[in-house]
Length: 278
Image (cartoon, rainbow, N blue to C red; front, side, top):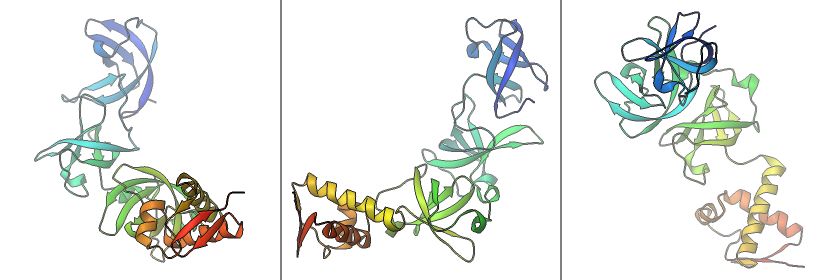
């Protein structure tokens, strides 16, 4: 079945001056000369992306866009006008996001997470930043606190960073719990911290339980060694200093120090930590 907005493998039917025509169940489709390999021959099978050009003609290209229909993509807005925003997505024809499909007004030069869609009536491909309609709300059956998930940051707010979770759900990373700068389009691994009664999901970048302490312990120990076996931090240090230098919360830092102390790897003094090298 031939699908618009996706990659298709089609057979070359005939070659003409301005390109070659490919066989499909949508009719013969032109692959312009500029997208053909020099040795293309009748009977060859070629992989092409299908879309409609600016004159509403069905066209094939060997260019691969940054997102297919049904996928999410991080795209930059090249222009915006009374019709909508035009996003650079790897093809000669930009992807339009109509104003009605913009969660917030898009601005030139900014990046956005966009869902690639196909209008079944016009067969035109468009983008939308109104993502809620594509996300599921049955998190309580699929996720639980401690679940490891893949995130795609799609919006920043005063509270924190809104993220797609495994491209199925949405959740939030609170700014006061994030120890490195994030921006729209960032992809990272995180963990479910809490699922609220209203089904909203709180996220965290820190692992739960023993594994979290183990990772933090390794980080603190390595930094201590890099500083020559002594550093001016302790369990009395401010949360801000710990966040800046260790990229973790004060609670996790104290647990890591406690674990290293029990292993007799460090000596704790009021304003510093000293490595015990045996």
